[in-house]
Image (tube, rainbow, N blue to C red; front, side, top):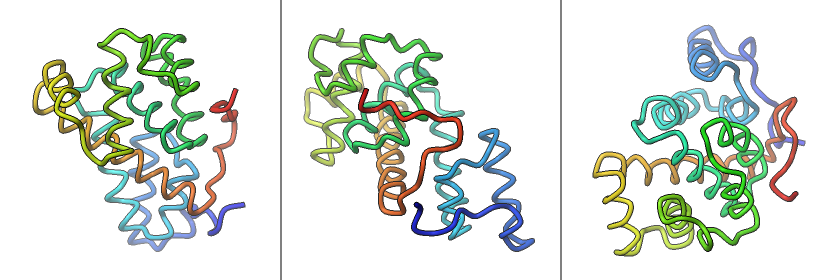
Length: 182
């Protein structure tokens, strides 16, 4: 059970309903994590804006983005993010072997460098708060400076969401099946 009731559009003041509408408009719906964040509408607005850029406007290849999201979800042991993104990852072209390797914790071992480096980057950012020199150079070589910064922000963004989800006991959205621990 969530620690705070989920906030619906009608729970917001007229002045803040546009925030709910913007979240729904960019994502197609307002998931439980944003319903929890809407307890503080201004925070929800800022956090959702970062997420909207990372998910929908960043030039990072969707396959790379989803590999990094799944790796971040795994590092955070966050079933909500994992279960919400595993289908998106498949649709973006992430191979089942990559998904299984991330889920099992074995990745980046056994993965081609162009997939494994993004798993490694997410692990290092989560565990160390930075990238070692070799990982940074590999990411920058593959992505260039702009997308390297976007990747770092992506891992930070999904780590932030994970903290909110875990601390506020946010439940899986309706219709999403738990599958991090298959």
